Length: 437
Image (cartoon, rainbow, N blue to C red; front, top):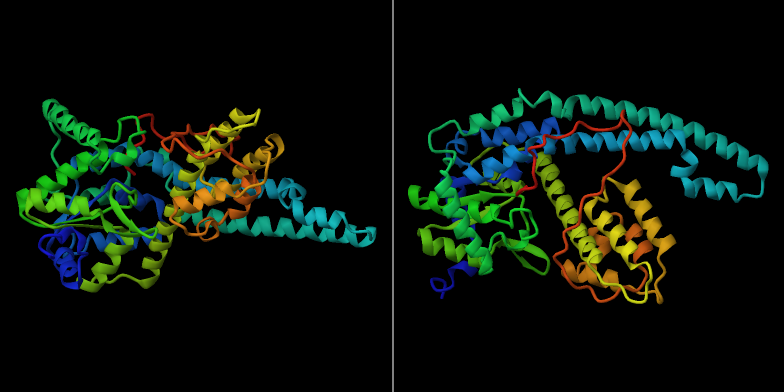
C-alpha cells in the first residue's frame, strides 16, 4: 500500500536524513530576504549554517527565485528599517501626548474625586513616561545601529548580497536566464497549470502576474532533480495552501499532490521546510553547530509571520463582505481593506484608529460574533485569542452583525500612510514589485 500511496507517507527519520544529507537544497526568495529581516546576530547564525561545508555545495537557486529576490531586496530592507521608525514614532507620540496614548490610565486618574491625589498621580505618570521614553529610545537607537540596513546605503554596495552571492559561486548553482522564447513558453505552461487549478500558484491569482512565480519555481526544481538525479529539499517561508498540506490547522508538510507529481515526473523525492526546520535538521543530521536560541528566535518569527498572514486573510475577506441594512457599507469595506493591508502587530496605532472609526461610524442591527466565528473557521477552529495578540481590538470592532462572508479573493490596496519628513523611511526602488516573498 505504501508504494501505491507514497505521497501520503510523511518522511521518517531515515528519509529526512537522506534528503538533508544528500539532496539538493533549493532556497526560495523569501528565505534569502529573511537575511535582511533578522538581527545581525541571527543573520550571522543563518549565514554560518548555509556556508557550512556539508550544505553550501548543495545549495541551488532557481532563476525565478533569484529574480524575485532582486526585485524585492530594497523593499525588504526598507520594511525592516520601518519597524524601528514605527517604534520611534510611537515613542514621540507617547512623549508629546501621554494623555492620548495612555488614555485608559489618564481617564481613570481623571475620574478620581480627590483632586490632590489626582494632580500628584498625573505628575508622577508624566515624569515616569518621560523616563521610559528616554530609555527605550536609547536602547532602540543602539539596536538600530547594529541591526538596521538603510536602503540608500545598499543600492550599490551591499555586504549581505555579496555574501549571498558567494553561497552560489559554483557553476550550476544558479538557474540560467531563459531566452525570451523560453520564458514565453514557460509562462504559457504555468498559466495552463493555473487554469486547470494545479498547485502551486493557485493562491496567488490576485497578484499582478496572475501567480506565475511559484509554478515557475516548481518547474525549475523538477528540472534540477532530473538533471542532477537527486532529491530536492525546498527551503521556503511560504505556508499557503497551494504548497503546504494542513491538518487541523497545523502544517503537515508539502501537498501530497505535489509530492506525487514530483516523484512521477522526476523519479526523485521532494520535501520542504522553513528556516527553523533547516536549522534543526542541519544540527541533527549534519552536526552543524546551531544555538538553540537561534532556532527559537527563527521559529518564533515564523509563527508570527503565519499569524499575520492569517489575520490579513481574515481582514481581506471582511473587506469583500457584502453588508445588509447598513447605509455606510462602503465605508466599512474601505476601512476593512485598510486594516487588512496593515500589519496589526507593527502598525497598532493606525490599526486601532481604523477600528475606532468602525465603532464610531457604522452601526449593525444586532450584536453578533459572526466575524469571530468566521475567523475561527478560517484558521481551522483555533480560537482567535490564540492567534492574534491584538484580539481585543478585533473584538471591539467585530461584535456587530456581518452579512454572509463570501468572495474570498479580494485584493485590498495598500493604505497610503502619512509620515513626517523626519520619520519617513527611505523609499524602496521603483523596480521593487510584489512577488513570491
